[in-house]
Length: 193
Image (cartoon, rainbow, N blue to C red; front, side):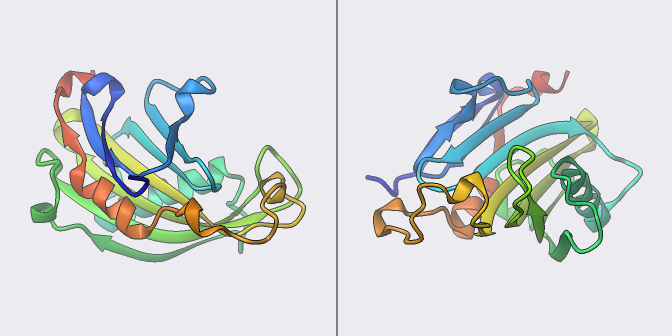
């Protein structure tokens, strides 16, 4: 049953989505801002963050996804030249989505060189960013999948990894993330204020 997906309420049940297997709710470990839901893989450094953000109506379409990617890069201290790169931005067909209220949706894939806990060591992380635009609620819903590509030997993330990856750890895949994006649903628009 390890590969089973879990339909999970988000933001007190106002939204829901299929969260991948082995997901630990980080709010059980530390305080998380009210506008975020954060999940970490039990056996890897992967994480998924669902955020409710103010609509950035000064940027449109693919540029909105790039804007949010750059904002994440700034938060990750990866805004210096050569520390982040957008690889692709594609529109997600509304017919494939459960979040019928969104006016448009995009999937951006890029990389960022980031350090954990302000360490010197930098890890290369693939960032898959799903953006759902809900102008009627003045909201951008941002779903970010952080998938480490390479871990620096000096990073705290390298401790205990032992260099080999066991088969039973089953890291999340892009398909797991796409399933989450396709399953995201709104149940209570009151969550937007």
